[in-house]
Length: 163
Image (cartoon, rainbow, N blue to C red):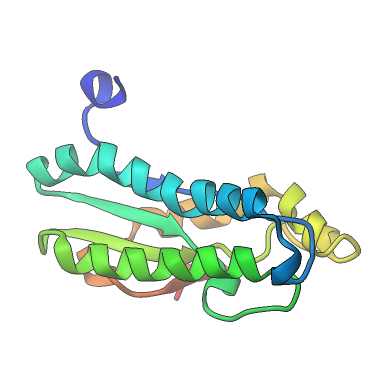
């Protein structure tokens, strides 16, 4: 319905994620592990499956799949989240190779943002970081500048630029 009413997006921001409470991998229940994979990985794939055909038909567009610093490193107690964000990095880099050269797919780490998810991981430190509105004010102009030259690159928000 979105594509029928508005056409394909120029910029698709794909930010699906949950974080499980801190625990060692072998104590994560099968249902919790399935949930985090379903949302963090399959959610991104489903959105791509629905929007990419129209974007490809038009021949332009940028897909930004939100990863995480933990999609490029790991931390004890958050293994399932790290695994899903590593999956997003790989998924997006493969997608970048499959898209027409006039398009882009970018795995993107937003950095630390004071959200409920960050409060779950780092309750004492979360207030030290930007709230979502402040983050968006810095990030959106940078995200709007992304294009085919950036495709397949693991990028992060650093201050007021994407690197």
